[in-house]
Image 1: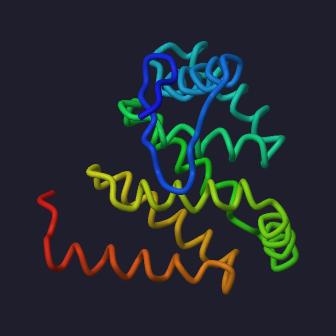
Image 2 (image 1 turned 90 degrees about the horizontal axis):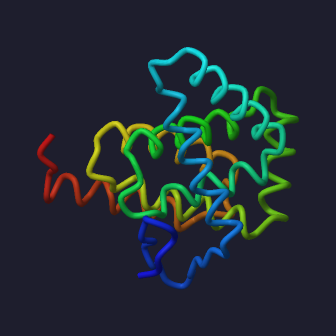
Length: 171
């Protein structure tokens, strides 16, 4: 396990994620922004919404940051949920042309594509049912985008469903 600030990172093969101090600070800041979006203080919440909207203007960078959020052990549950909601929103194509653009981009950007796959792998088996449901939505969008480029995704979802039926989770 690796340490990033006050959080521990899960180690997944064959990917290892290290954060230099600047990236660690950015990630901690993103988690704070995500948490603030649920604030009771209207000004704090609006400021958070503005920051999220600004980050969404650079989809590749923002998606990569969101994938990093779910890889941190003990990250607040609300941050994981909002990361998945924002990921789904950004992967949702409004037309076939936009779907092709997203598909081509992910096929050319291996790091982002693999990070999104890892995000789905981590969250589809999460202990929180809301996270699993949100992951299912993101998973479906990503699977639709990648089509034949992510055959392992089909195996992952089949094994997850099989595991649930053979060893059901108590909800």
